[in-house]
Image (cartoon, rainbow, N blue to C red; front, side):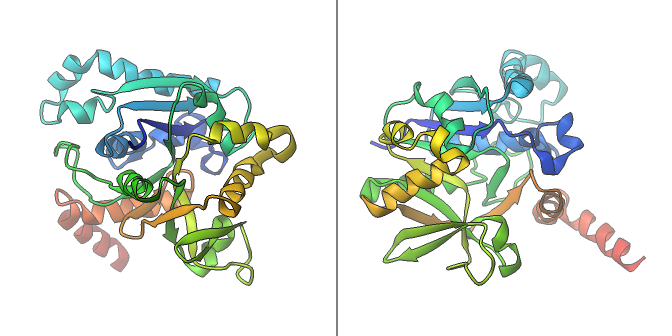
Length: 294
């Protein structure tokens, strides 16, 4: 059996996207015409997960409630845009959707703790502002045609060894200091270095916001308490696995990695996505080339 639950972490303030994120949470900022969270939910559903948990802060509760509102008003939305499938307009269709409110911002593992009591067995964790895109289909094409296989790849890896798994993506040297960089030996992660300088970085592979954690995570939250480890609580837990049962990984370099929490990266995401969408790439490329010549 694989995981039956997935957690989307969406409690962050989005400080790098201010002032935009003061009004629009980074998790629902549009990738051209589709909110980022729609792609995240579609990725989870493509992996066969039917229980989706979203962790938000009190100020972003309305974002999660809006998804439920769309679920209740789908007929009206379909009348407005009959060309869009119900799965596009209502991403939480056919899943159980759970909302959890994060009372304090105490790091990655602590955010998971707000949902963990509702979960049994292994589970996926996805950063709500990180998209892993395999294809660039317009929203008029049903999301049952997968845009991302990232979560599915983590599950397939888990089924091989029954170990916790993280998703990795390569980045250029100049960006390594912004991420958790991993060292890999014999198919396992042996070290995670947070935001190293270039000389300290053991590779170009970094954590990219996709995780599959085993059921013992709940007990490890107590073994490595947040009041002692703070925001490094999750690193302490992963180190425990690395030194014990092992920490698996999957490379997701076959996916484009977009981050709606970083202004320049999100701008590049819009351009890259537009240049790859069949319904707009030719016209957009012509316009862009003309602008570059002006």
